[in-house]
Image (cartoon, rainbow, N blue to C red; front, side, top):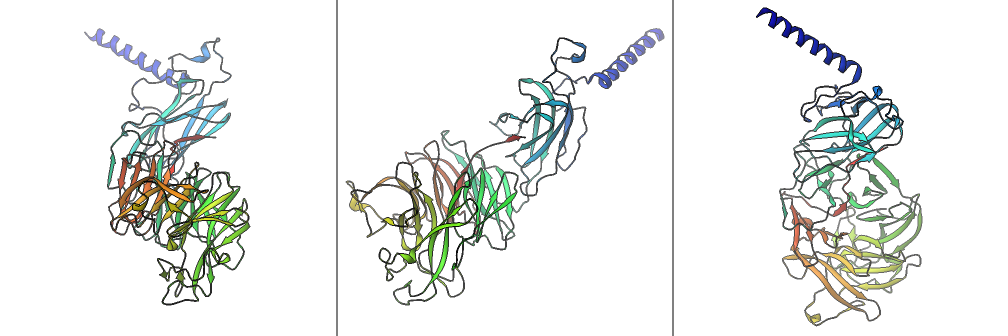
Length: 526
């Protein structure tokens, strides 16, 4: 009996010694699920509770490749180390990972989480050839564990390193959707970028996925409160979010890094930039809104004021320099001095100032030959020839167009509109704040016939009433992304007028100024 025990003990010690030699010299991989990570310590550690497993030189077949002279190792990587960098302050929902290899090679990386239903592996990204490889993982969700894998681009089954990291919760003060509803599957695969108030009195940028999870969070630390109309998500250019901030456009990338796109505008101006702006995707040119003081303008029929603020549009080049400008004040024939502002507002731009026109959006036409500018307080949309500044037409009640169609007499003009923009087919898409009834706002698409000066309603969708703010964007799938502003609801609506996706933010004093589609992208290598 003792002999049997003795020989069994020798067998165990011999097997254990062989395993130690295998780990020490050949980098053997321990089989099992991702949860059974037994090798590799976290480096560059942080609150992510990072664990990794490095398979240095192992092809995944259980054999030592160096013992097989028939194998070609010219393009094969040997991973030495994987480290996760510190959590970015500008976006805690992103991670940068550094991978060191023994030899020059290319590697691919991907992430996956079992905690996100219906979401599979991210699209693999490929690094440049070398021994140091950098990967960014974007669009991570809070309170989630992620698994990552690095592998050969030519052989995805050859896993060079794998591991996991945890993404902690965002601060409790962050405003999250209170209700998300997907009624049909035909929703766009883009995410939604919005500006929301943060509980410390400042703004924050959020990007939501279609389940309502926050995938990007960036607090905007600026000395202007969120209600200020100089502190807003303006557009998306160069795959970055654009914030309008008085005399500077802030470009914010997925890491949360801010780059100032300074503008140099000629004086005199009251507020150089406000509301919405347009930047070409290659940043070669742009259009921005500005204010200027004007004397002798009638904002109210009862009390003419010498402190009236009017609006204009400036074109800028790639360096932010002013190329030319267009101003309401330079067109008294088309916009007479005695035209009262329908929604005259005082003290918006400073004490004792009067806001007459209140421009709130500007977009170029598809051919770039003109631009469309929205004047909220005048309830009119104006098309201006780019370069010459000639007013081509004005759209609104009693202006250059009449309603067309069998129900023309029943049509109502938009009032206090936002986000008026041209579509590729020449139609105009806008958010009509006052809407057709006292209790509704609406998204509205209009067909414009510039020859007959007739306008026809193509499509509309009623939303709860929002006296201020609101936005519309036509998505690539033909649906429309709508922000109902002060109604605190986001929609995706199809061409049949059916809401296929909604997200609510039921918070007091929460105004969603605008919502923009944003491409979903997880991994980037360099």
